[in-house]
Length: 359
Image (cartoon, rainbow, N blue to C red; front, side):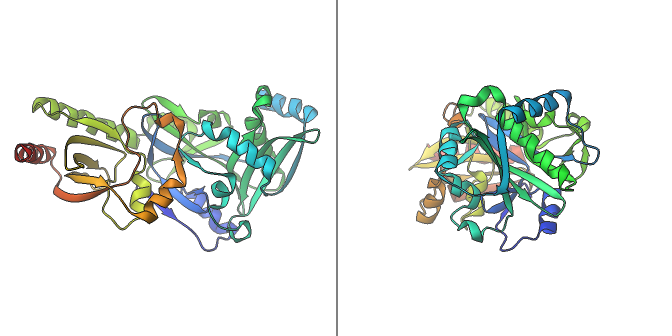
């Protein structure tokens, strides 16, 4: 599946190791696995990466950063906790987050659970300038794996690269305590290049391909990723629209994953769809379902469900979406599915028929 989410009731350290190796990562109190998402006005492939810690050696530049900052600051490694200072750092940095933004640090780490009810064994590295907290990072412990969750830092100290510094301290801690894998999360690859590419500066990196195989990072560009498949489909669709003189609007739909995993409604389930027309506040759309390899034509409308609206209201889009062009930021459910087919020409024929009916 392209998008999977579940909330574990319990989680042993060895089970977390297996989930991380299987491409899962933590999202608040849940575990998620996805192969693509909307970001920076386009669709990008999610590529999980990890650093193997056996014989791990920091680069010269990273050794220099560690040495310089250890002289300048002190740090403490301990069980994670949330206080007003950490919350203030989170609030100041929310705007730099790339995708979805949780309303506060507690929701980011624990959702609406009490911290003691969270199944993850979460630690923090707190960096101080004297008595002042200037950076903090959070990471989860497995049996042999460490998974980085979030790094925050005071922008007044930006020249010290504290985000990279806490990541290096996490690796240093993992090595010293016998862990064998460090998971910094994922990078996103789109036609615009990489996002989160600073993680690719780490040594001994591997990536997980769409078949679930972990390979040396040197082979990442030789793979065929999901965003490339979708880009090819988009070009074909646009060419047919132009051939038949069909007006359309390409729409970015960031909530495609959330809508289909927190509701029983049949919703739009792709990251980009094509809007052809509107009738009575409903949109006639065409979408390509990559998992099934079919096209769907139908009428959709905003999902007016109180529970869903509450869920969506607690997760805001990053500011990067506001300037990214056309996007729809509410779940869309199908009112009428006119056609599901393997054939794009059949889908276009159905659209032409519906357009004639609309008048």
